[in-house]
Image (cartoon, each protein chain N blue to C red):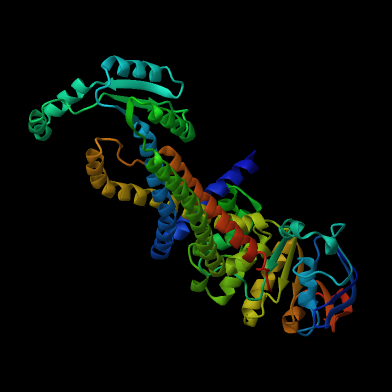
Length: 307
Length: 225
């Protein structure tokens, strides 16, 4: 029991001691932490942007809406039958009829078009059915539906434009993969940075390691302070990365809000979610311990006491 | 406690540092290893602490053949042994107290035990007022006393010392040897390598003379005058 207690106390001392060693060289430690932070912040920032981009793209369901313009002069009753027919289609979530009369009222309220429309003898607008596909409806099925509708004699034109949304989604998929690659490479870089820092640390404390081994220190005992150093570098680097991330998003928030306003509030301001926070901290810790472990495994065994 | 059975140690370059050495050390003995430099004194001590491994022969430490001990068991073995070095091997960037505490920290003692026993060890070597100093602030003789305090603080069964007085003048050397005597009197087994024959003549105890890796003589010296 007391042995376990002593062991835990020893761990706590190593943990605090490693932090103390780092604060004794504030500039070197600070720079290392800054480099780690920047390396971790870059993929996280990309990830936040891509994630928010996806949320925005997902939020634009209405982008898949398509409009069916009927031949001018088609009776309203016929337009209503088409609307009912479409509403019953399994690909369609909703179908809304905008009659020519309703449409022209909208336009007359517009100061520019209002004047223009008043000059015309009769209503130039057709009846329109606005169709919102269900989420399950895929692009080929919708294209078939479009074909069927276009073939009808009472339909003038079907305007279906989903291609650019598909392009956007494909681009976001690509970006997401790029984020993963960047994250892997940069975490690798962090492992190398921490490994090298710890290697230098080991060299500086060579005498202490040799004497400790002579006095019967186990590998675990010798290893522990360095692993804690790696732990601190990873954790502090991760926290610094989150700080950088928050700062960047804060700087972006103004332009983003303006952009959002232009798009009718279609997307929310960028935010760092809990998943990103955990991923950055976990990535930092993993890289810290990984880097420390590789350095320790390679360099500690080589130090054997010489008498 | 220790038994060497026909132990040979050959280094990489083919030099035989020890040749067919057999000896036995009983618990509580005080033994001086002497001989010219290169006679094999240091090698013999290194084999006991497993800093080197024997090329041939058996070394039994409390009945265990340590020559074949796996690497991972070495730390535990070394914790039973206190070591004193000619260059004392103190850590310059740590205080006297921290230096002496190191073996107890390694062995996992509690803070309270460490504080008590480090103070007791400092008292025994007469340096109680220097615990906050760094080794560089001490004289050579005082540094070696710190080295001895560090070697005995964890109450090892065996203390080995390689030329502990090599850097000291005769008066300080005698001082250090008397310190060893005191620890031996409370039951610590001791193996001390020294080529300081003048000093040895003033001390008693069993004396093993090595020459060219072989034991030349092994017996009790006459009682000190």
